[in-house]
Length: 402
Ligand SMILES: [Zn+2]
Image (cartoon, rainbow, N blue to C red; front, side, top):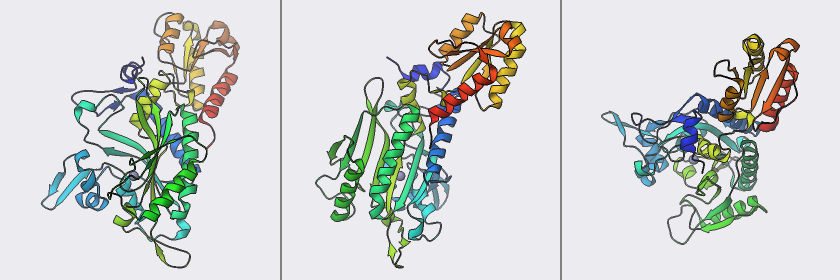
């Protein structure tokens, strides 16, 4: 069975070191390169769909988390505060919402600006017990593909439907297979904030947004602040994880006293939607390494093309082909060392490189390359420019339109 912890190490994706601490993985160059491609993709997808990106710091004053309610409800999951002066304490944040509420409050808001979609792939920290930590799936330093959408209650249905559509688009591009959808609803009891009528409406809007997708209802599983849809995936061991989620929140808009001026000039309170298209970069990559057995789709493969000169007299042609590939926006290198051609082909296969270009004396003379696809298929020799076009097209097609 594939275990992302073992394969992630073999592929140079990430590293753990007891001196850095449990649950605090270090992303190595191959992992950082793939993650960078995925983050860039997510920002493009979000930008094309009306999201605005921000940067906010991973820590904030105690007052911020008192206001947000995190200290009331999540203190056990937070690291102890850092005292910076007699009357000032800083805390590592357990979520991005408090800062995104401050983005909303940075100026007065009108109904014309809504829905306001604030997005960030931001750092946050959870004080998980060391016994549950493992690889990338459960970590203490988390980088979440997060967004907070501020909108009128009437727009919740359309916003959630749009989020679900973007989840589908991102999953298709990344190669994520969903194992199930769960609609978490209110249960009996008094712990829920917000009026019964808002909950009824919100739950019915979520059902409507789910449309004819199949899902299970989970009464009593909602957060105290609102109902949510969790999108589950299964890892190689069959364990289910939530990657993507859409959550309604009636609580934080009241805590932060968020408002906007409606068309008639009256003050209204927006609803907050927390949503993540693919979850945290850590959990996502833990899943992707296992789901693809390390053979990532070409658009986010750390190395997309390895060029292999058959012998020394083709080395110059191999270098110039690799340089042209880099110029064309591809991630490419040349392997001259590493033994026989067969041994170097096997090394590239072990690293799951999607394309290998073999250049012998004949190809060097004719300006052609012989491409081999991951999996072993060999393409007939073709002009170097055609080979680059073929790989570039595979990248563009795999990434898909936004
Ligand atoms: Zn949030």
